[in-house]
Length: 198
Image (tube, rainbow, N blue to C red):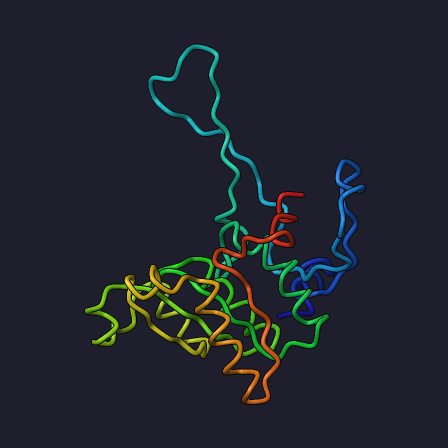
């Protein structure tokens, strides 16, 4: 029951929080004003034992697989900034692009659902799967379960047209329908997404 959860757990997830950059990043511009708490962060660092390592060598692993069940992995770190920006700009939906089993697209679809934003995904795959529905496998199952709108394109179409043009075409279509789309580039990789490292 929620009432039995510690205060931190009950209220930190999906909370919009002011963003305070670390001291070393305080002179960068622009600095994001807010983030959404989408993951259970910080994640732990575990010592990892590997055979045949050189003497005095230690391996440590950052366990971002423990950042949350549906949103596990490092992709949510970017989405905390990107989706805060989308909401601040009044978006009612997000558009992004990736491969048919893209972890970024899966995380975007789930995070958008949590924030009551519609999600439009452009997924590139083989021509065979574009012509024949690929079914409910892997990340595609999760995306369909959360109601993401999915457009499949062939790898050839993706290579010829490019990710920016494909997302721009979908953005223009949504604008004509009266929607307010926010485009997230492939992998969430842009200047705002780089703040995930802080």
